Structure formats: structure tokens, C-alpha cells
Image 1 (cartoon, rainbow, N blue to C red):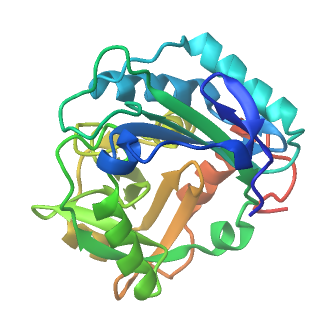
Image 2: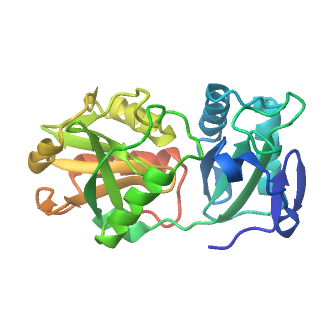
Length: 290
């Protein structure tokens, strides 16, 4: 993956090598900040408004004051795309912290501004995985109670994702008190008898931007979409499973731990949703069923 040279630093543009923060920066010392990852297809953002809206919701939830409007930030992100002459598939990382100040658990003085930066890099679609599906593991959900906030506090997610990798898996399906919540960096779904099940959009999961689109796709395709948490044991008899995120898109799950999902191939409903996603994102190159 190649990082593009021009980055957004506060409201200015600079070369990536020029970005410097003092060591007393609250994102570095406390994980005191929020972030977004926005998908880019053929040089165009996908779900930009949804991501910007969520960034503002997350910032408000943790009481970080942003001295910028939705429109101003959107315009800056579009300019970042133009300045880098981005024309390929990629992703953009956007981060906001509570700023730089002497280390103290309490918030810094009101005159300390939030720090914000954004950069983009190439990120080709993994068509092979999207076509054939992935294996996952199950893992106990030990995260905090405000998972709807897209915060920088990701250590439990990192540990779960690493365990999945060490066991040859793509993702870790998290569960709490026997109920599946989401994955370490994506939302997760089960299909049973033609109905799509996923955990309700409560504080216990991230309200994914692609998740919202999946609900829309389901309505358009007349597929029942049920915000009902399913049990870990339900996976044994699932007809299909898939996960979603900005970078994973709609990814089929064909194996969980030692359980193969049906015949170990992506299911019909998952494929329908993938087709709807490609249409929604205006994807014309590197399509799954090209």
C-alpha cells in the first residue's frame, strides 16, 4: 500500500513527512480521540457524508470540540483527494484528538485546540476473498460499554484480531454473555431461513456505515432484516454468514472456528448484497463476478 504525499493537517495541506506532534499529544498518551476510515473507489469517496456525520457524533460523545463544520471538513477531504490526484481504489484515514497539552487525565484548558489530520493510500479490492469467503474465530468481547464511539482505544480489538490471524483467520467474532455482538473491526450477520440477523445498533457495537447500507439493500431486495442478537451456538446451523466494514465491504464468512458454514461457499443472499454494494459504490472495475 502506497501513502499519498499530501496530507491534511488541521485545515492546511502539507507533505506527509512534515507532520509532527509534540510527545505530550493526547492521542499518543491517552488514546484520547476519534477516527474514521473512508473507502475510495476509482478516485471517489464512498459514504463520505455518513462517515463525516459519525465523526462528529463520536467527537460529541467524548466531548471533543471541533472548530470546523460538516461542510468545511467535507470540502477539505474532497480537496485532499484532488491534490493527490487520486484515481485508484484506496482508503482515507481521518483522526481527531483532544489536542496537545501537559499530561493530565482531566481535559486540557479550553484554549487547547483539537488536533486533526488525514491521509490516503492505495487499497485495492481483495476480489479473491470477496468471491470465496473467509475463515473466522470466536472471541470473548471484553471491550468497554461505549463501542458505538469510533474511538482510538482499540487494544482489545487489536488483540482479538491478532489472535484470529495466529489461528489462520480473517476476523474475530466477538460475543458477550453468549450473544454475538460484532467483529474486532467489522459488523457481523447471520442468515437463517432467508432472514438476516445482526446485533441491534446499541452502545455495544459500532454503528457501521456499510451496516446501514446493508439494511437499505435488504429492504430493496425484500429480504427481512432483523436487528436481533443471535447466539454463538446459532452459528452451528447458520445458512450463511458475512461481515461488513468500509475495507472489507460485504465479506462472506465460510468457516467459524471448526464449523464450516453450510457447504463452505458464499451464499445466495450474501452474493445479492455484494451485487447491490457494487452498484451503490459505482464500482465498474475489479468486480466480484466480472
